[in-house]
Structures are given as C-alpha cells and as structure tokens.
Image 1 (cartoon, rainbow, N blue to C red):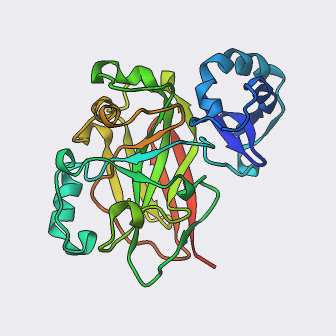
Image 2: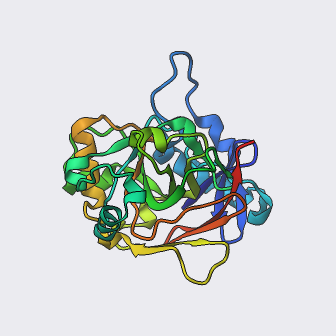
Image 3: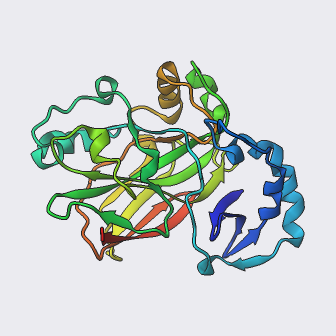
Length: 288
C-alpha cells in the first residue's frame, strides 16, 4: 500500500494516478496530551489501522494525484538518522575530491558511524529546497529512506526487517564545508521525504532496488545505482543503529548515497526515482 499525507494534513492511499481520501481513519488514533509521545502516532498505529483503511477505500473520495500537495509521509519523526559513505564508489569519490570533504579525513562507514539530522529540516516533495548559502556548494543526495514501525533496541540483523513500517525516497541535502556533518545537513528544507510511504509488505527485499536522481530533465542521471551496492545493508544498519539508540515508530533511517553527487542552484528541478516506490519532483529555490 502507498500511503500519503497531502494538502491540509489529510491521509490518502495512492491508487495509480489518484489519491483515495481516507482521512476519517485518523479519528481512530489515540488522543494524546502533554507530554507528547516521542514517536509518530500514525506510524505507531499503522498496523492496527490497516483494516480500517482497507474498509474505507471502496467509498473513499478520489482526487487526481496531480492536483494535491504531497507532504512528508511521516509527520513527526523522533529522529532522522543517516549513514555516510555507504556506497563504495561514493567513498572513493569523496576521498578523491577535496571539495566534498573540505580536506577533512574521510573514514569508512564502520569508523565514521551514523549521524543525526535535525527533524526541523524535514519537508515533503512539493515544498522547495531553499538554499541558504548560495556562495557555497550544496548537493542533494538520493537515498533509500527506511521508516521504523515499532520500538527497536538491540535488534539482530536477521530480525531487523520486521521492525520496518515502510520505505520512501529521501534526499539528504548537504552544504560542503568544514563544519560538523550534522550542522551542514540540518538547515530547514535539507531533508526531503516522499512521495509516499510504501508499506513493508510491498518491498520484501530492500537490498535490490534500482534508483536514480536527474537534474532539470537531463537524459543522463547524475546519480544512478542499486541498493545491492550498499556497504552495510538495511538490516545491518538497523542492527547497528539499535545498538546505540532506541528507535521509535516514525524514526527515519537514510541509508546512504552513491557516487555522482552534484551541486544544485536556485531554479533547478530534481527528479528522484526509486524502483517499487515511485518518483518525485522537487524544486530548488534560494532562501528569501
């Protein structure tokens, strides 16, 4: 199932070129009061709500997919985690190009570890990336985004996929420079998630998905690879992450980007495509 958030925080199911409005199902979410939960309530209750979503579909109002504004599929992630240099060719690319690492040392992912992006950087595909420092190089990095479905701590890789709610396309936008990685990757709009959440039952093997990132309708993608080329697989990343953190429903794990990272400028349009997930177009503007 392809589950989206659209327009004024409505809930939808994507069916071909239409969105079925199942917002009424959200009434089944538990009421929350302060202190607010450290997880996303929809993702935490998704399995329980699936039968209600299925029951609502036959009579749900349908609108054209092209007519809605798609929001981030996850409204309230507690954490955005990301894996650096998790494709061998990108590691080699970074080591060979000082402009990518500003003469800082580049370590293999097993030594570099995961990093965190601010949740305030999160947008959906129909909001623009707003470049905040146009005098510096800013790159988008296409990645498989894994959305955690239930509380996970010290999970073994063999069990890890059972903790996944679904998958999205992620763009990890990065300012190149000497500052700490999390600082350069956390400005507003520098994490794009979309176009919708494909539930885990639709993707049995996240380690065999082709994907590509194209600029301005160019015929040749800037980035193109397959998740089979990940250095650490999705299960291995979840095992590693949960050995340090407790992951909660709605937490998002960005799994790494391949070679071919390129600079964006105001006026660019990006198209990110992922096998079995879909595609999204994202505009680039300058911060006002």
